[in-house]
Amino acid sequence: MKAFASLIAITSLVAGATAQFIASISSPANGTVIASGANFTVQVQEGIYVENVNQVGIVLGLAPCSQVDCNAYDASQEVGDLLYLGPFNPQSGPGGPPSGELFENFAVQAPAGVSGPYALSLTQLDLIGASHERVYTVSNIVVELQ
Image (cartoon, rainbow, N blue to C red):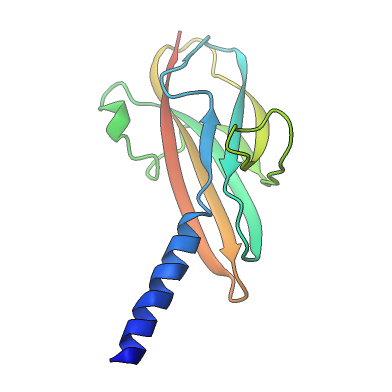
């Protein structure tokens, strides 16, 4: 029974530690209005952690979601217009989130000639720990293109 309790405790710690690896979009804010065709900055933040993490990369995409509830949009199904595909190398420093988390800024451009609600999505892949556990996450916010 003690072994089972220990296993539960270790599993909880690993799950909690893994949850800290999830990156998120910290800027622009959910609901931000962006001019069609405009350049804008996407700030991606990630928590500080103690385990070995190998960043594989991220994808930023912008997909129209006017036919569905944008807040319920499943960004894992479609990236939409590809804004960025490549490495993610978060750092600490000035201009970052107030929480002090690691971040990286990406200069991207909204598609021209479109308007309406769009899902700005972030897809991330990390390899975590000595066993290189794959952690794949997808999240999104809603922006309005005008």
